[in-house]
Length: 509
Image (tube, rainbow, N blue to C red; front, side, top):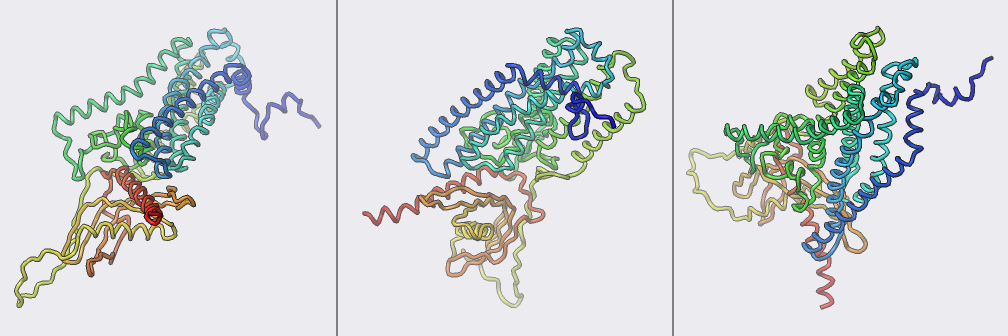
């Protein structure tokens, strides 16, 4: 019976033979001082910026409210989360191309490329041998930044879903930019040249897409195609150029993460305000913009992989063996599958409206008029119609969160029909639950967004809900600015929290 030498057994992991290039590159990258210096500097910059944003946010909201409570803490957490996400993405855009732009060109410059080609390794094995260690290093930077995100999570106002979406966008951006720089390293064969071209292309992806988007909006404005929206503002410019922009993707992933006007800076303000750039009015989108971006980045990564394989060959480029033909067909099939799933279906969509057109159809109110009786002149309603909306908000809050100590809703009205003591309301509603702490403060909990239609009746001046339906088919909430509704709910919670303190103070007086 033959036994495997110890050196060979160490090159196997779970029965799979490890790529020797991966082993060498991982050792070279992680054993030097460069890894620790880069990681330490990366976290130091994030930590300093996190503290600065925290102090600015504390100062801003203390001046606004004069004291600190759990509701404001949630707003602080959201502000930290948004700013940290954009800073982390900005740092990755600068760091990732440098990790791979010299991976293959360095072999040419050191004179070891011919030795590498003389090994039995295939071009695919060499590509992954250089790509995986570099991406492992980039993922290490992403994972190391998660504790800074956890600070925002501890403040509240940020969900696990928000963190997962941000990490997916950061990872997808790093992978695509890394594949781009690695292909340039194989094609240009000079590290300085590949690095410069990589950063130029990254800048074009980020700023060029915004420039093309702005030109498209200017053209639409000249042609008079930016029509006023029924809910305020204007319909958005088609966001197709932004599919390439990682910052646009990150902004769209945090549309529901309100932080207040203080942090509605570029590029976040492009997706939340009443402007032609508001992606909440985006027409023709069947899923969030960040999902289009991640899918497009996956397609581009596969394309750069195919191009790099041909540039790795010293001779007979674009000549394929049977094995390479099978591999290339599988890669092209994956690309076509991604295109079909992303643009042809709504599979795995987390919920994005498919149209920017808002159609509101008022509910008909049946009024039976007998021909033998004269029609009475219209009489002003004897009930307070303004009280119907708070009644609906309170009803939906109890319906969604029956076991919570406190829950509040904010209603955005599409249409309202009043007939005597009867009201029919349609619109969008945002509700959030709060936990009452021992010290009398409210801790924000889960929040929900729905479309709603309801029929209310008034008796003795008190409105009650006779019928209600959530997530109504045909009610399009595309253009609703959920962040405004969320701010209104937080204000209700602050007022309720203050009302809990009022009886105690009045009793002492």
